[in-house]
Amino acid sequence: MVKTRAIAAVCVLTLLMAGGVLTASATFASDESARGTAWTPREGDWTQFRHDSGRSGLTSANATMKFAYYKYMVKTGAVVQSSPSMANTKTSDQGIEMLVGSGDSRLYCICGRTGEVKWRFQANDQIFSSPAIGDINNDGQPEVVFGSVDNRIYAVTGENGTLIWKYTTRNSIIGSPALADLNGDGMLEIVVGSYDGRVYCLSGNGTKIWMDILPLGPYGSGIQASPTIGDLNGDGQLDVVMPGGDGVIYALAGNDGSQLWNYSTTSTWGTFSSPVIADFDSDGKPEVVASGTYDKELVCLNGEDGSVVWTYSAQAEVFASPAVADGDSDGLLELYFGTYAGRFVCLDGATGKEQWSKSFVNNYIYSSPALADVDGDKKLEAVFGGYDRSLRALNAEDGSLVWAYVCPKGIFSSPVVCDGDRDDKAEVYFGCTDGRIYALDYNF
Image 1 (cartoon, rainbow, N blue to C red):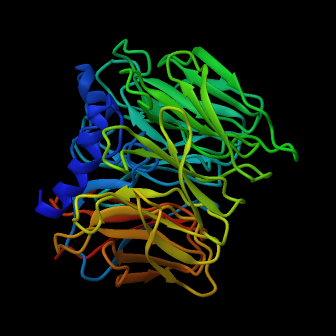
Image 2 (tube, rainbow, N blue to C red):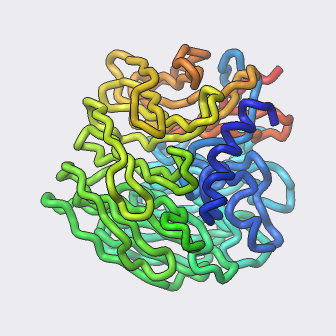
């Protein structure tokens, strides 16, 4: 691993691991490695929404893409807002598969190298949820977990998409599940929020471990964001941070769902943005950065008690989830996110002070950034999509444009950087509202 990217990864990973965050940002071997199961993701795999259950958006995968060129596309039957997850799920072939949902109600398993569709799973309604990959039943094989607008959470085999179980909630699943060992039993649990206002914690066999009922918003809005997992109070146990439909950020104990603290934003429509957990001020304790989306703010909260560390006025709604890394190699963490006004922003993670921002006219940024060295310069780039049809890679240090790729329609899906063809150089994968899933490459 190159020096700059090692700094970024170690800065997030080491500090969080010191606080007991087994599934925190930049856990590249992923959450299963501590359990001794037969199937474990490889370094550089992207197994959950925002890469990991701490929602860092940071990966060790690297590329040499001085430009972005079309590698292949896969056509689905409707818009693709789901974000891909990537790992070797068909263990019989040792390749990398891409799992992504579509508005056509199907989950697609796609060969990362060729774009061949290996299998499809048919749900009963649209899939906006991004799938999570893990060995949820310790059988030595990877499973895929995702939600659907049909109110259900599904678990299917990674090998061929055979249904293992489904769990029915009372409303749509829009957000993405998180996988982690919440109770220390050596098994992965599944945490996901539903538009019914409930947070569900399920075992690997699909039975309910606990459920927490959060208030709905004044207009009946339920949970639309995805849960984030980390040890908030240093007790060695993983906790869950879940934005509610009422605009409140809730911290819940991972073992039983009891409430640790909450923070009320001024949003009355709920929030789409998922929090990120990291030690932003280098005090050895994690903080939580979250947005109420419609309150047009980012807030940094003390992980132990939810008290405010700093706030930042984004001056526009924040639908995207922030990514975290040491983007300028100063040993400190930065935050990266886009706004509904088309502005992409870098903040100092410790103070919330704006480091730089770039504005893109006629653009809304729903897509959450991926952080990786995509051009081979040994520095991180932030890769994200926009309503203006462009997928951009910006230098994480100063925001300068590295490259852009223009699609036929807007991009709401969050991109993934992963070595999908096993050539030791990563590609970029994402969905588009034109109904296609794209792979970009320039590793020649």
